[in-house]
Image: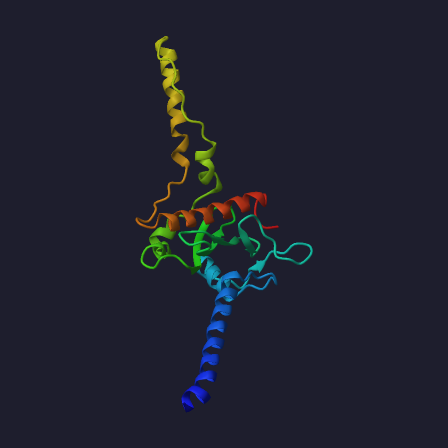
Length: 217
């Protein structure tokens, strides 16, 4: 009786408070977006992973002091030479990939760092492997759009003079190699959604850089 009347009620109330606080913290972490221009610890870690430093980077702001964003881009950081894009992408889980895509001075991918991952352990989490992330190094905006911009090769007549046939064969050869410069994703077996989500993040960063007309301002 003493336990039920004196100890159990405050104990239950304490447990409820702890659970509620835990849920609030989890919700905050999942939805928090930095609009102050301060480079967070996670961003510092991402910059260090890609560039080996973070001290010279600043977050790009709009004229009104808000963080500059693009479609799919949470924030943009630059040291005047390199430009990095903070992106949250959908993998198998919605918003399961919080990454930093770093570009070099030519707008080419220098590296990708995963700051937070909410994908399936043992499957989607394999996109953190160095071998998988390494395939994005050197990728350009043109490579991610090559397939979209290339017209399929159309069948052509094969009669005519030998010179005309040779000309058509050369034209078809040039057209058919149009996709050779496109990027081919080497997805992780059993983690297609997570793999594609990472590629989408890279494409988003390259598209945003392209919109910036040559990099950070």
